[in-house]
Image 1 (cartoon, one colour):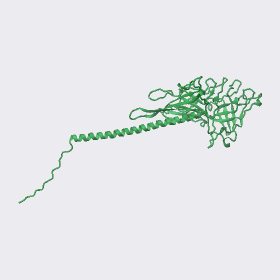
Image 2: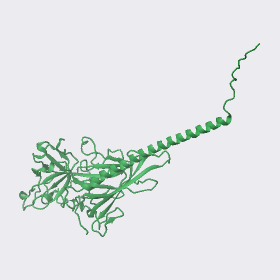
Image 3: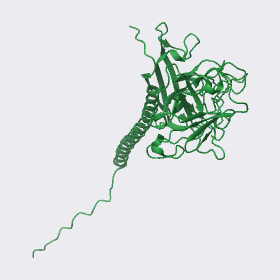
Image 4: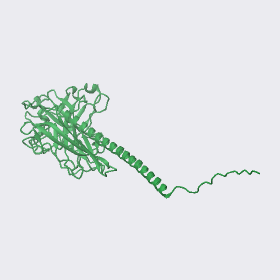
Length: 411
């Protein structure tokens, strides 16, 4: 008798991975994870560095383009040699550069400890179209290197203004004698009446689409065949502009200095614009025109928004914005962030000193000898690099010829 048997399958083994296999798998996994995380960290750091570099370089480009453009346009419409400044008498006050300070810009949150700079410290000389301020900015620089920073003030006629299209209708008062002095006793200001055709017959103190509004605190150039003088508007109506001496609010620098008494300064004041006869009846102003003048100052601000550095642009005279005069003057505006070094050097005429390496100008080589401005900017990132723990920095420089200055061909 035959018996059949069914063979059972082998029982599954209860043996798993060996310890060596497990350790090897874990090691391979850790290696792969390490490679992945390292690649991720490098990509993340590269992205951060690329963004930082883009921000820094964009700030450098924006700052350089703005400064270079305004330097190139400096002096447009300004008489060759600049403006002769008041001189010759005890009341003569030196003309200050409009750097922000507790005095010139009291409402700006920063109180700058910058030295007072004057255009004419001896109450004589001319206001040039390019006015350097060597070392007038805060000490900057990256990497622990202390770098003195500069300021620069540029003068030009506002190309958008239509104020000077027609000659002024009148200027009052006139001097009351045949000599260069004086206005009637008690005179504190001079008023000019704008031709009704100016700004298409629209009020000059109202903003419009086709003209530039005239407001207190703005600089106005009066010019005729005799001379040109620079004044600061004190009050403005629909057709008149009045310039008042001793106006600390609208003319803090100050420009409004008139020959009001026999001992007042006479040189380079509005009296020079008159035709002077042998009697007061013969004293008149010939055809005279008024132009809006822009005074632009660039400097560095390291204290308004700490710890950020900013390249600032101040347009106007720096008259403080207080009380009812909020429309007088624009406060300083940031042009580029992170700019921590701003320096200027100058190529001068004559060629005996073609470049001023110390950035300072002397009596032998004053600002009137400037023919080219060399600009240097350094910018720093607003945060450290994740990998190196260092701040990314970069620099750029350029040279700009001031197109409206007298040109000398040294060859």
